[in-house]
Image (cartoon, rainbow, N blue to C red):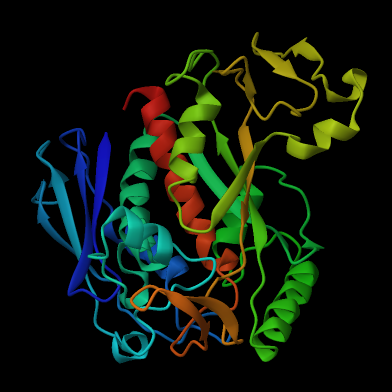
Length: 348
């Protein structure tokens, strides 16, 4: 199953084309709408006030409630744009954004409004695609869930199991420990008060993957497949599987995952430092990883930059509507990317 996302943040619409969706899937649109609502902005002071209905309009690939096997094309309209906020600073490359890199890559013809195709707005159609992938995976007994692992140094409890992540998905602020979540929200609001932003991390688990998927080779490696999908999400700057960077603080006796025979005859591990992958191949344990997300680059503080038209140094003072933190809205986005990666790994 392959996907292609189209549109720009301030264009008339954004969307996704999914190819290779198996025919006959009874698409649960209400479940997908719920996923989109988890990502949607404008719910509180923790996110941008931009409000979008994010109602998916299916143009092809579904007939009488079931997928047809033809490309599944979905459109999501942009209805709450303020392009004038960007016209004043259109030639000023925003530090931390893709503005300068995109200007060079596309000879200055890229849409600068709201980041254009590089905007987090484009994660809405990704969530739709991930919603379809989740429903295909569920038929195979595979489930994906995530929670906020940390924001600006405030840590949530460690991932437990699929049920705890299901419960987190029902929350407006998807954490396992609500007390930690409150501290995180305070950190976000403090940064907003200071005309600044904060970053954080998201921990995700894919449950039910059988052992033996993947390969050690380039292009087939399980961790490589997931990383490719995850790094396509705006603001993701690091991906770590299992114990991740904590491996650097361990001895082998601590990092290894002792094996045992379960009552059902399957091989299990006593712990899961490897994150469900050894040698690029799944080992039957939950595939777990943590992504690190940078602070939102769009901040209202004065910043130094360059004027791409005049080719001279400049000072930038941004206007517009921006998230002081994107981590809490990105949880369903990371789940979507993981679900699509899992589909590729399983050959769906």
